Image (cartoon, rainbow, N blue to C red; front, top):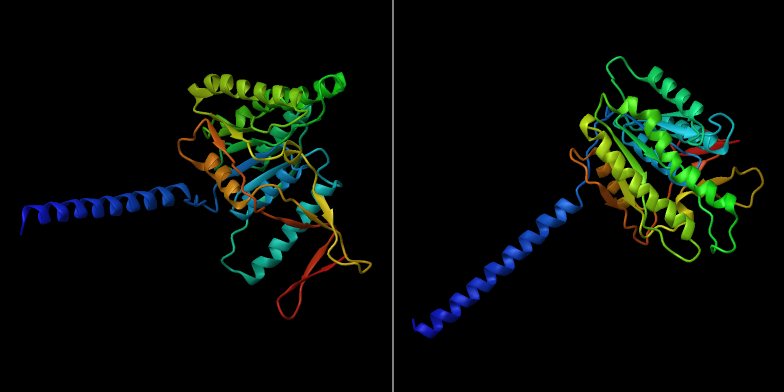
Length: 320
């Protein structure tokens, strides 16, 4: 074999192995980046501070379907629309268990929580402690979905709107941290806050409050580090600010009178929900996770004031 031919073959082999190695490395990174967090059906308890929002409802039902006990905070845990939606969802899941023996279902416990009132937070912490099993020392995580937003330019907004945003978004985080830290220390759990990321016209005061949340989380992280309690923020870039705190959206599926109203908790995609799973269950969580929401939405339809019954063909029908 001539020297020139051998050199050409050597270069071609090196190029071939380089391409194969790059492809293998890409596949490994792809698998690692898209891994699913496998949750144990007995993975413990998680508090969602506000299920009055569509985001809080979506997280509550998603985590409960993974096997968690979810404490769903609401200002009215009995007669409010979110409370009725969660009851309808739980009823549907209980009926589904009759058909799918391998279906894993967690529990949703409605709970009165108001991040602007310390006495309500204190009572909520006591009630949560009463719900825990004897083997449970505390809860795994607190996800603070409570907050408020008012869009408007600085010279057109009222002072009470600024005060409301800082009262809910910043002081609310501090009250939540102080009120529920006693349930996180024994388990070395974690706080998860909605951080900055949403931008746009008329969000000056809102952005200021969210930057304050980031600073609060950073200082809180240093203070709680000796106890093993983690503090995580979620970068909400790609999610409209109003979407984080909007109520469930009603829509009709039929013009026939008597058909119950359906509500959509359409906020995050499935991939974004998996990001929150990693924030909740990674053994060594990062300080921040990016939701990076794609275009396709994850839809969670929740029935209102409905009773689910199983028909002969094993489908579910609703009765008002």
